[in-house]
Structures are given as C-alpha cells and as structure tokens.
Length: 601
Image 1 (tube, rainbow, N blue to C red):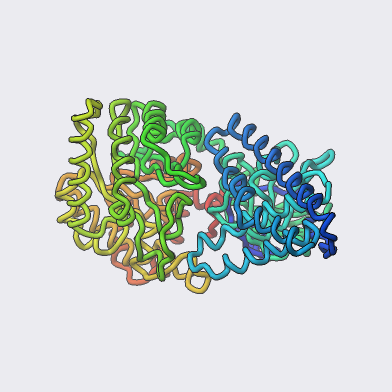
Image 2: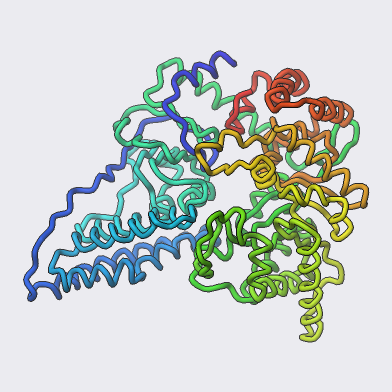
C-alpha cells in the first residue's frame, strides 16, 4: 500500500489548499473564464444616458440572480444565505456602482470599459491594505464585477451543468453563487486557481459536501476539458492526466477510504472510552447552526467550540440582542441535553466584520483581537453576553473567552459578566443560575499562569492553532515560514501537559479544540496527556472515537511520557511512525487513514 501511495505522490501535479474534504477522479470540465478583451468605445454625450441605463440594467440582473440564489440557499442551508449578502452589498457599493456611472457620464466611455477602470482603481486600493483578510476580499469584488460584465455581454450567468456525465470542474475562480449551483449528481469536485479556506466559496463547498482544492496556480492552462484528473480534497493534492496505474491506485485508496469511513461511522455513537476504561468527551467545533444535525449524526457529544464571530461576518450591521438570543436559543435547544460551549467574539486578526471600522494595524495577530477586541468594544460584548445568558435557560451553556493572556483580563471579563447579570435581574430576564465560564489557553503567558488562572474559571480549552503560532513565533499564513508550524514540537506537547496538570490541580476540566485534535496522527500523543475533552471538525469525530476505543490508557500514557522526553519534533514524528502502525493497524497500517487527514506517515 505504501508503494502505491508513493506512486501517487510521484504523479502529483501540485499541492493546492484543501478546503472541502473528499476525493474524486474523473474527466475535467474547464470553465473558460478568460475574459474577452474589453473594447474602449467613445460615446457622444447623447448616447451616455442609454449606456448608464444599460449598466444599471446589468446590475439589476445580477442583483436578481444573487437574490434568487440567496433565497434558494436559505431554503436548503439557512445559515449560508448570508454568504451571498456581501456580494449583494458590493453591487450597491459606491466604489463600484457610482464610480462606474460617473466614468460613463463624464469620461464618455462604454460601460464595460468604465467598469474595468473602476475595478482597476479598487484593486489598487485593496493592494495597499496591510490586513491580509481584508485584502483577500478583493476576490469578492472581482467575482461580482465579472458577473456584471457577463450581464453586459448578454451571456447567461455561468452555465455550470455538465452535459451527461459527472465531471470535476476546473476554473480560475468560482463565486459563492456558482458553487451553490453545483450539484453532486453532476459535479464530483472542483479545483480553482484562487481562493482560500476562509473564502465564502470554500465555506459553501464544505456545506454542500463537494470535494474542493483551491489555490492551484494556472491550473486552467494545464488541463483541458475531457482529460482525467484525480482530486484529493483532504490533502490538497491534484494529479493531472494520471497513468492507468495511478487511477487504479486511486480507486483502491478511494474504496478503502470509503469502507473505512463507513466502518468508523457505524461506531460513532459509542462512548469515546479506551479499552481499560479511560473516558474522554469528544465534541464538535461548529460555526453554523445548520451544522448541528450532521455533528450529532457523526457522534458529537456536544459542542466544544462554537465560533460566534461567524454570525457577525458578512453583515452590514451588527446583530442585535434579539437575533443573537434566537441563535443561541436554537443552538442550545437543538443540542440539549448535550452542553454547548460558545466562544465570545474572536474578532480581529484575520477575522473582521464590515460592522466594525477599526483602523489597520501593523501586526493584527498581536493587536486588538479576541478578548482585547471585546474589551475595546464593550457594548458589543455586553450585548452578546446578555443574549447568551438569556438563552442559558434552554440548555447547557458554557461561555469561553478567547486569548486570555493574564489575570487582569479575566477579572475584567468577570466584572462585566457580573454587571450583565445584574442588568438582566433588573430587567426581569431569566437566566440559568450557574453558567460555567472558561478560557481559551492559546498564548504562552496563559500557559505560564495556568495554575493561577485555573482558580478563576470553571474549565480550560487549549486552542492549539494559536498556541502553536505564538509559542513558536510562526505565522501559519506566511508562506515563507508556514512549514515551520508544527503541532508535534516538543515545546507544544510540554505546554499542553503543563496546562492539564495546572487545571487538574485546581479541579477543573481541560479540553483541547485545535486542529490537532481531529488528526489521528497528532491526536495520538494527546490521549496520554490527561485531557478531559477533545473538540474538532465533526467529520473527524468517528475516526478519533475509533482511535480512542482501540487504545488503552496505559499505552497512551506511556507513549506520551516517552514523547515528552524527546527534544525535536522529528524525533517525535519518527517515534509515532514506529509505534502507531503496530498499535493501530486499522488506522495507520494498510488502510489509508493518513488520507483522511491529508498526511502521509
């Protein structure tokens, strides 16, 4: 099996960014997004009003298309309709709409040329923005502008349906509206040249269950419609024009992967308990309410991390207390009797909302983000806390505060929480008398102070995504250093152990909700570190539960102790490669569990 897997690597075209899990192999349909050259036409003054009207009509046509797609999306996927709101807002934005009209009227040029000129100015402005997340939003503007150009040309909006057979779409880009129009019965997956994990298109692909790889530069020029392609939406690998052997290998891997998935799914609802009785809670990390049913189906024992900031993104206005209350009420009601841990706004850094107009920062990752952001925007914070507490009577609510770095922050948070409770009492609003509060341990100072902070809260949750970044001083989004981002760094493992011991000495639960919890290879060392809870992408829950149920606490503790004595991540990784295939042959042996996580042992 290893030889065959290596053969797949030999045929690898390129690594992209895996944004939606699953695998596919089949013929390609290249969506020709190469724009025809836009002519520059000179218009007499008398012709300009009609040209403006043509542009306005194109805008209206696109608006209707987006509104229709949004309506359909809200019907099937109620949380995802808002994804298209940003494109509707861009249509109305003066930077695109009004300036194009002005260029037609004052410049005397045709609408297509005026729009291209406007878009060039917008690109230039975005390119000067330091914040990576905001800068990346130019993709949305480009997608909207392209649809308007298509409407001006009178063409139908992006015919995506493949005639007669299932295909893998290859395109420079897909807009959220395009992605929603994809159907599994026609499209096995898609590959694009641009995009990222946080793009609206990626979010929708995951919701629709369509395997996808993005960020594969110039792929539309390397492949033609009708050619074969293998797509690994888990590891981000794409094999172009695979050989017969590679196709056969892929089919074997796919069959094994599917059988493995079916097998682990059958036991997903069993308790996550080792063979000698050690019990862990396995929960889901969620962003949307509509993810709840699938999370429960996959065996989640509650929500270990609900990322509340996603309800604020893509909006022009802040959600009010009532809309937040309804969201939290539904979340807690649907999950009852399982507990739900809601993280207060983790805004700032790479996550920003149109609702806030904060000035750009030199280094957003170290700036006003997470709990600092909430303490800066206290009215927003109080509104969120009021809504959470009001919803607390409908289920088991736990509140967690992100990126706490020291005592003063948690003290301020608790003071505000006490004031909000007093307000609700004055207002006659009921709330649960006991709502456990916790902190995300994701900066080194919180690790160093874990013994002290544990006395202030009811539970810890270790956020390894950020903890690794800050502990190793690695910006995981920086292509020059991202390869140094290492969950198995000995310092990371020791920090986790330190936090667990500090929490347990104070009698509080310690969980972990970073991505390493959902990867069997990086999760294995965690099982012996004494964690009480693991929270992860719901799709990972069945395989992690199986891993836990196939282990013994004695073995895992012994392995963890052994790994903690190693001084390099290479040594940790080597030891895991030696041990895991023997202890978990189903996960790390002939069966390609590594595919399930985009890794090779």
